[in-house]
Amino acid sequence: MTASPAIRTASVYGSLLLMVGVMLPFLPVWLAARGFSIAEVATALALQSVVRVVAMPVLTYWADRLEARRRFIISLSVAASVMMLAANLVDGVWPVTVCIVLAALAWAPVMPMLDTVAVEQSEAGLYDYGKVRIAGSVTFIWARSGLVRHWASSRRSNLAGCFWPRTWCWRRAACCCRSWERPGRSRDATCPSRRRARSC
Image (cartoon, rainbow, N blue to C red; front, side):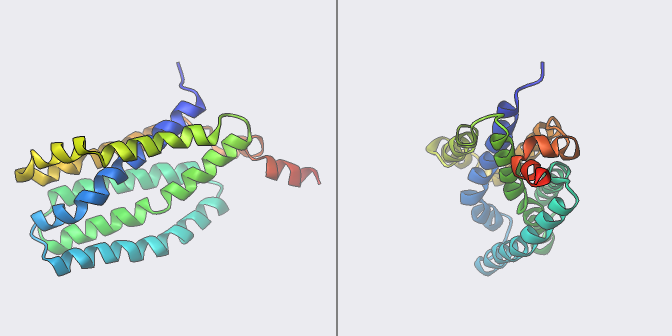
């Protein structure tokens, strides 16, 4: 039996923000454990911020222009998953930096695109946006909780273990997105503003 749109979208929010909750507190520590100096950690995080600023408007623009937000979300989630998996496997400061920067480039547009899809589906009456979005807040808070910190601290000798959940989260998000209706098929049905504009 196919899950409802609300459950599928909540699963995407939950998976992605669980990943963010794990990544934010532990990424600098993980980089330091991989042999990064303080300056190299700062450089890697700064490069992530730069590529996010560039990638977000460019990729979201093309996703809207091509009417392919669903395909972009899936493709970028898979790409981010591959890059973070590679970051766990490669050695050296610059190979790891390249992997996490490319992961940030792929990840940056996903949440804005997801919010757009969720708002359109909410406007179409498929679910209440706030009730669906809260799933992400719950998993984010849980990921930042003491339970996760305790789990991570028990694996100090292998901090890479803290980052395996990110790969699973991105893969889970991509799988949930695949069950959305294709934008081209439901564009008017899921976007009342476009439907009204065409009737004018």
